[in-house]
Length: 447
Image (cartoon, rainbow, N blue to C red; front, side):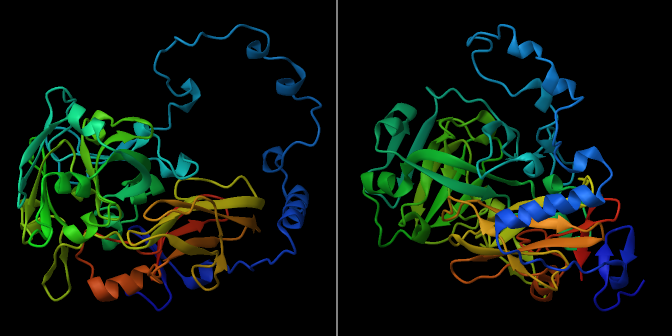
C-alpha cells in the first residue's frame, strides 16, 4: 500500500488517514488554578461516570464512612521484613523481559516500567537490565580492580582500597543504545515500557576515574583512550575517550540509590559514563587500560554500530542524543473519559541538561511548552508535566525536547532521512501516542 503525504502509520496492522485525526484546539488559560477549576467543572458536565471527577460528597461511600482495619489494629514491627519490600498491591509493577535482542541461555533484557514511575529516580529493583552473559553475585572481598597501560605504576585495588578514597555522588540516566530500536522498522510495540524502557536513572556513588589514573601516574599526554573490561563471561570491553574522563564525570561506582549496586547492575563495581550508551557502563569492572588509540574491540567493531544508507558504518557513536517521551498517557493505557488530565513524561540528553520540552496534541501541527519539574540536572532524566482537557476526540500526543546545546529532538522522518531504515541503535525520534475516541491509547508513527 502506497503511503500518502501526511499519512499516519499505525504499524504494523493498518494505516490511518489524516482525516481520522481531529486537531485538538490548544487552550491558553489565564492561570493554572483557573484552568483546573474550569477543567473539572467541564468534566462534571460532560461525563456520566463517577470515576471521571473526584467525589464531592462522602455520602454512601463505605471507604470513608467505615473505619478500616488498619485504622483500628496493630501493624507489623520494623523487623518484618528486615529489608523492605513493595506493597503486595504493587505486584504488577515490575520489569518485563523481551525476546527481541541477542539471547544467551538466560533472558538478556528487561525493561523498566516507565509508565508507572514518578519523578526521575528509578528504584534499583526496577532498573532495566541488559546482560551479555547473565549476571553474577560476586564476593566483594575477592573482587579486584586493576589499572595498567600508559601509567607509571600499575596497581590492583581491592574494594576496601576503593572505598577508602574520596567519593562523589551524582544523578545520571543510563540508556541502552538499542532503546527504541524496534521503532526503526515500523514495528510499533504496544507500551512505553517496551518502546523506551531500556532507560533508567539513579544516584551513583564512587571514585572519579581520573583520580585513580592520576594515582597510578597516568601519562595524560600520550594516553588518549582507556579500555574498560568487565569480569563477566562475555569479557565486555569498551573504548572510552580521555576527553570524557578528564571532565571528572566518569566514575568507578560501587553505590546506587544510597546502597551498594544490585548484582544485576554490576555489583560490586561498575563504570559510570554519563551521557554515553549503557554498553560503555561496563559492569563487574575488573580492569582499566590507558592507551593512545581506540581499541576496536568486538563490542564496538561488530555490535553497537549504525548501518547508514550508503552502506558505511557509524562507529564509536556512543553519545545518547536529546530525547523525550510522554509516559502518561501512553500505549496500553486508557483515559477514563472527557476532562482534565496531567500529561507527564521524561526528557534527557547525553550532551547536557534539558532546556525545554514542547508537547503537541495534534501530531506535531501545534506545540506548547511543558513545565520542567526540578531538579533539572546535566545528563540526567528531567520530568515534565502539562495540563490538558480532553474533549473526547482522537488526539495524537507527542513531546519534543531541546537541550542546552540547542539540539532539538527530530521527528522519525527527519531521522530516517539521515540515518535510513536499517539501523538498530540510537533512535531518538519523537514518539507519538494516539488517543482514540474510546480512550484507549496506541503507539503510532507520524510520517
